[in-house]
Length: 99
Image 1 (cartoon, rainbow, N blue to C red):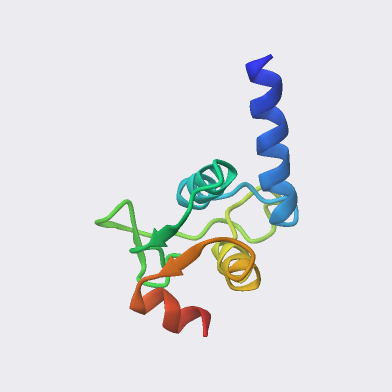
Image 2: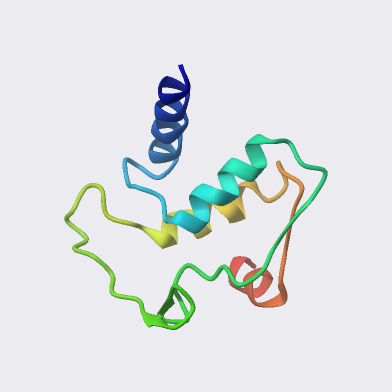
């Protein structure tokens, strides 16, 4: 039963991003929001605009033609579009990016 629930949750995440696999960070944000927290403060999430991945590795975007590749710009767009629907607050850098 748990695998079925996990599969449904993953399908929902992929559907939010036009069929793309979410980054681990974005998937974690959605998992936390599914728990209906009172508030969530996001810090350090920049959609790889810093050029960094996993704190100190260079971000290498995948092939944009790959239908399951990460699309961090879609994740940022989702955050911007849904900021008022969830108890989300952002660090200064992310606030500025989403403005």
